[in-house]
Length: 161
Ligand SMILES: [Fe+2]
Image 1 (cartoon, rainbow, N blue to C red):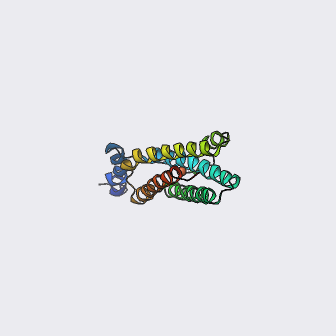
Image 2 (image 1 turned 90 degrees about the horizontal axis):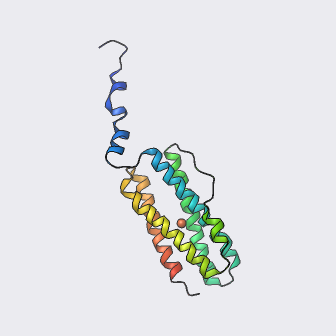
Image 3 (image 1 turned 90 degrees about the vertical axis):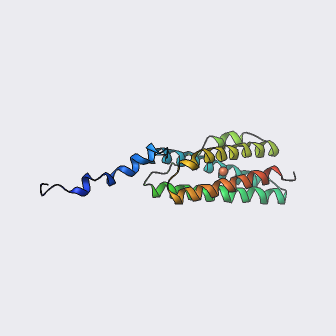
């Protein structure tokens, strides 16, 4: 072997991981980044909708419930941004179209039903993607995000207004 040929650089170990990911059905880095950014935009929309809706509501119990959902939505925004950072990606600064659509609904029960449909969309997206995420930490965090969304959907469905 010539002196300048570095066996490390030609070793399959340098690139096999990424190739294996796609081969085994795991999401590629680009696909995962696009997914995380799509969720980030949705959670940002959810966070803004619940922030404004909580401010409009006078019933203390309903306000507390919507504020709790708002804290969660803001929390998941942070988690998603951190996950994007760990993949050296760029976090989207956009807010999902869900925000405008939800705020165009004047009635509280109808807007909360729409919020829950949006949360249901997040649940479906997470269920689809979770088996395809190889990164243990991101997988764990998104599994928690899924469980928290299922809990909040049930709480909003069961509210007493
Ligand atoms: Fe959400």
